Structure formats: structure tokens, C-alpha cells
Length: 285
Image 1 (tube, rainbow, N blue to C red):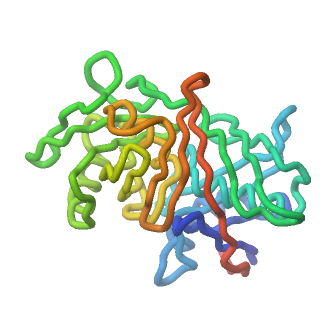
Image 2: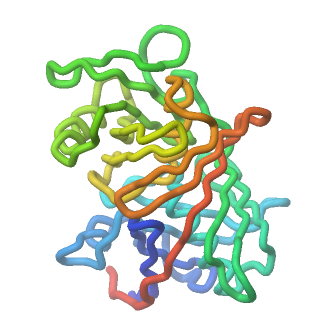
């Protein structure tokens, strides 16, 4: 069948977006089955994941967001992806509201769509609360949150702070981030026995209490240029370790995000851009 799509990115974290409101005839199982092919950068379109736009049947919920990893597994959430989702649904007439509530596998999220006229230039997302309990991450081990907890990663001790933003994240701090380091530690920590559902991995350098630099290894995707939920987790982890304030600018390989961990609500707010690259269609079985 012929499947229309959009190619989008949030600071280099790129996605294929499939609009099942405009095209309800596209079955979800076709998207799931073809995810490895669609995301392949040599034989398919190429992306870090697939976003799916669906209508909502719940009161108070404007739209439904779904996201699939390149291996075909369904992810709970993706912060860069949901900004792309917000830009798409507004600019394609699925909402006329500048503030919308979206259902995700990680819970209901509020998006503020910033821009002029019919466009969206940036999106501020209330990512919900930072979750630190081990069952919420999930992570095994002693009671209490995992803050700078030493894990053996192939014979090397890594001080890991674990945070969930609806999906699991393991954060560790280094003097200088390097591709060599994250490429070696990322795949091993992703599947560490302490994370029963695997985890996203982030290597972080503190440039100042207001500015962090991070590299990412994403669960089910490998190296990516950016990770929105990861940036939120990095901001929380840095504050928990006394390395930053609650409001930080985070530099990722694809660009910068502004993250605020609100003291009163425990919610994390992420602000950043979203970009449409092109639209097209592809034949799928």
C-alpha cells in the first residue's frame, strides 16, 4: 500500500511521521512490521524512529502520540519527537489551539506551540514529573533512588544516576565527553542487568552550572544526535549531584535545548525547535 509520510527532525534527532488522522486506512501493524526497513538509512527513508499521529476519543485529550524505535518496538515517549508532532498537527490543521494535551505511553503531556500565524517555530513541553524510584525506571537494587551509584560496566566502575521521564535513562558525568567513550559504554550500559527493560544512556560534561554538554546512546536506536527525554533526565541528574541549578541550557550533538526542573511541581519543562524536512510517500506491504 502507498503510505504518505513526513520527514522531520528536532535538533538532528530525525523521524518519519505518519498521519493516521489524514490517512486512517494505514494499519498500525504495517508501520510496526516495516519499522526496521523505514528507518534504515541505506535501503529505507532513514530515521531515529517513527511518529504516529492518531485522533483521541478521551475527554480533555486533543490527540494521541505513538512512537516506534527502528527495531519495531514501541517507545513510551520521545521529547524531540513530540515537538515535531506538535508542529505537524498545528500546521496541518488537526488543532487550532496553541496549547494542547497529548496522550502518550508515558502519560498525558501539555504542549505549548510557539510561533506566528499558521507556523510553529518552537515547542515547550511539560514533560511531567521526574521519576526517581527504581520500580518507575525500572532498575533493580537497594531501596531509594540511584544517585551516583557505581555499576560495573565491562570491568569499569561507572557512577550512574537513573531517572525516568516515562522511559528509562542512565546518566554519568565525565571531564570531557567523547565519541569513543559513549560508543564503548553506551551499548553495554543500555543492556546492563540492573535495567530489566534496558535503558537510554547519556554521557555528560559540565561546562558551567547553567550549561551542560551531553552525548547519547538510545535504547533500541544506538547513537543519535539528540534525545529530548534524555536532556530532561540529564538536567535532573546534574541537579541531584550538585552540579547545576534547576534551569540549564543543554548542548546536544544536533543543537541546544532549554530545560527547567520546577521545584514546586517536580515537572520538567523542555523548550526547543522542530523542523519539517520534506514530505513524500512509500510503498509498503
